[in-house]
Length: 459
Image (cartoon, rainbow, N blue to C red; front, side, top):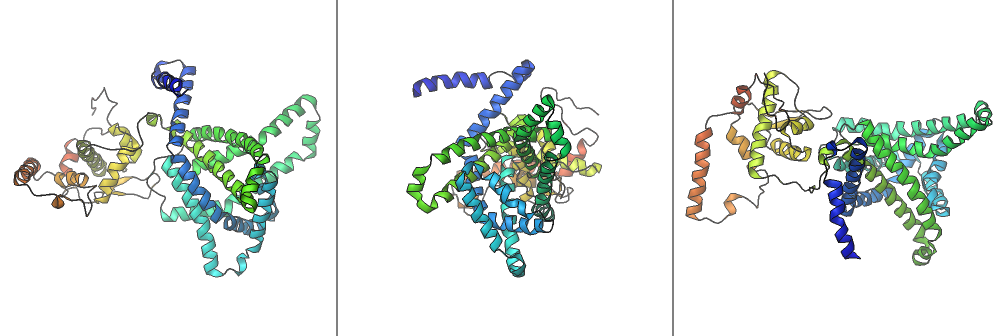
């Protein structure tokens, strides 16, 4: 059987990755793109990237769930809708069946036992810290999926997280309350009595859980990553994740019904084990949808290359000179700084490779990032005194550490002499030349390069 599967693997890969989608009809383009995205998500899943982050979020959720609900309960109590927490939690844990009701009752009991008013300033600070740490962990998981290395600035993190903690629950429960009110309105009940329209409304009401979860996932995919996410891509991920959520929920409910063996093995801990499994599946579905949204928005990442990126030494040096020259041109022209995405498109390299190179230049204090979203990069020092030799040295020495330097290598006179000759030859050829010279040399030319194959510059 394994031999037959291996023989089928290569034809399947050739079908998915062989043709160029641009050369195919529109329907086949959509099919090939969907298959490629599906294959890449399955690859990430099999390599453990998605599962590892989902397991980490399960642990953080267990620690922060009760404090999060306690803070939300305190906020919602001021609006008189705090009694809605239990029905929402019951709905979330519905696939667990009776165990879901048991878990909900226990969690609500813990929440009721937390008296925010008597915690004191330190206790309240720790309560908020636990909640904020959960949101920060979620953001890091999404940023890793979106290949984003920068976190939000501290001030923005505070405002965004506070809005999620305080304003988010109010908006969610208000929307659910309006939905319930509209559903029970007299006019709606009268319309439901009309044969054709009533059937249509009943069908839409059955779709409502899907639509709500899709809307929630789409909002998360747009809001959480520290990058600009297109609504269309977020919606694609939200649709897939929403249907996965509902479908896997049915399957998990059937699993719980037949899980009497877990009670025999784990006894009183069976409910907690099942709860952790459902939390894991929930986070995994959410991360799968985020991965789908990423690959939908970034077709340049739809390839079979490994995410572990390595740049050759000459690639690092050439890219470093290009990045510093482009940044210098914009600086002297009074134009906005470059973003990672713009630099990657101009250099015709992936965002990962560009971000890795820019990070090396930042560590050497040759570039600084602004507080904009996304961040823009400006010179970190005076370009008039920044030697080209220093730029090359910054990327050549980027991965050296205290225990891995040139001076720890053995001394062989012939090799040392040859190495010094190479260094002197480079120094003599670029002596006295600065980044300012490179930036001003073509300052009257447009810095955006056309696509490969058509490298003509225009004035």
